[in-house]
Length: 133
Image (cartoon, rainbow, N blue to C red; front, side, top):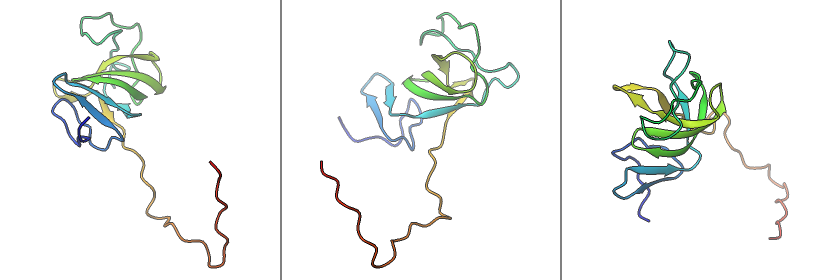
């Protein structure tokens, strides 16, 4: 259990809430990282396989372009996902890129809006009651 990396050779893990690299394995696990499907526009989505191996059986339907998926496991450039939005297999394995072309990209985590500053309550407002544990 070392420091949480901000980048790793196998994949991008910039901006993840939690990112662990299992030493020497190329396997990464992240907590609730979401990915957006950007590939397969001309094919109705991207190819999904039943297992990590590229020779594993192809699932009967494709994961739709613009689908949002949750990362379950990331091994090198192979992503095991659970579908959140869009059409296609509920779970499966996809390549994150092929021949340098991105198929899925990490979804940016929304940040608090700078247009709505957090302000202190007006003077004289009672403090919230403490919650008993």
